[in-house]
Length: 445
Image 1: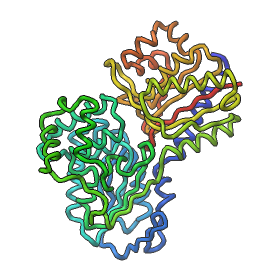
Image 2: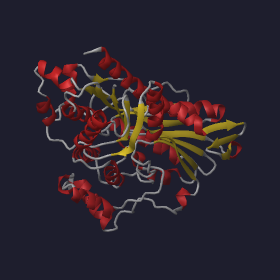
Image 3: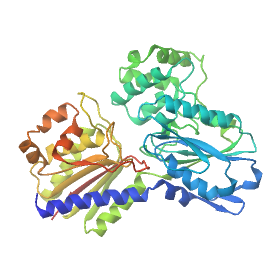
Image 4: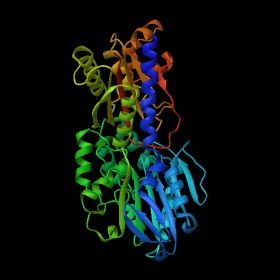
C-alpha cells in the first residue's frame, strides 16, 4: 500500500471521529438544558423547580449514561434519583441514578427487570413531580415490557424475525409498539400526571419522534391495522409466536386499547426534544474534511434501503468523480448518513456497515486512490465488536492474495470475517452515542 493510500485511509478515520465528537451525548444535553437558580431551562422553556416535590431521571438507550450524567450535574442538589437501562458495555459511573445493563438488539431478562423498576418508580410519581427522560438509539430493545399474554421469549423471537426480514426501522418499531406495554406513548401514560420532559438522541431517518426508541413518551401514529399490513408485506405474520399473533388479533378486534394518540390528556404536561442527530455528525465531518483540503459534498443524511444497493450507488459516484470531476473535483470527499438494512441470505457474521464496505470494495476494485469507510456511530455494527470497516481500490487484490474470495463472504453475509482476515475492521469500542451511520468516501488527486 503506497503512502498516498495510507494517508487517505488515515484521514477517512479522522473525519469519522470528528463526526462522533459533534454528537457526544453529554454535550448535546448541555446545549439544550441549563439551570438558572431555581429555574430549569429546556430549549428556552422555563420550569420553576420550586414547584416540584421530587425530580427523577429515567430512560433507556446506548447513550443514556452520559445523557443522565449531564442531568445529574445540571440538576445537582435538586435531583432525587432515577433509573435507566443501557446496553452491556455502555456503563458509566453515576451518583444518584441507578443503571441496569441489558441486551441489545434482542431484549433480555435484565432489560425486563430494569423496565419493571422504572415502572415501579413511575407508579410513585405524582402531579408535583418532575420526570426527565433520556432516550437514545437502542431504546426499543433496552426498554422491554411485553404486552399482556406475551412472554419475553415471544418478544425475543418476534424481534429476531423483524430484524432479519429487511423491514425499515419505522416498520419494525410500529410492530414493537403494539406488542409492548411501554412503547408508543405508553411510558407517558405510566408517568401521568407528573410533568415529563424527554431528551432524545435520534438514530432514525428524519428524526420522527414517535419512531425514536419506539416513541415511549410521544403520541403514536401507528395502529394495529398498520402492524398487520407490515407483517403481511414481509410475509412474516404466520411466523410470529402464537401469543403475538393472538395479541394483534385482539387489537384488530378492538379488544385491546390502541396506543395513546395526539390530543390525549396524558401528553398535556410533556415536552419532547431532540438534542442530537445524524445531520450534526455529518456537518462536523464536512468541516473536518474541508480543513484537510478536500472538496466536500454531503450526499444525504436520509439514506435508507438495501445496503448492497446503496453501496453500489456510492461506488458509482466515486467512479464518476474519478472520471469526470462531477459532482465535485478532486481531491474529493463525499459524506452520507442514515441507516440501511440487510436482507439476510446466509448465516455469516457482520452488520450493515461491514456489508456496505464489502459491496463497495467489489465495485471500486482497481480504482486508484479511493477509500470508502462506513461505520455505526454507536461503535457497534450488528452483533459484532466492530463499528464498521474501511476499504480501498486495492482491497480485493489483497484479499485474493490471502485466499479470501470476497463474493463468497458477501453471499454468506460474512463481512465481519472477511475484514477480520484482511485487517480492515474499524473497531472503536462503545462510543456512548448513537445517531445512525456515517459513510465517508475519499478520492485523492
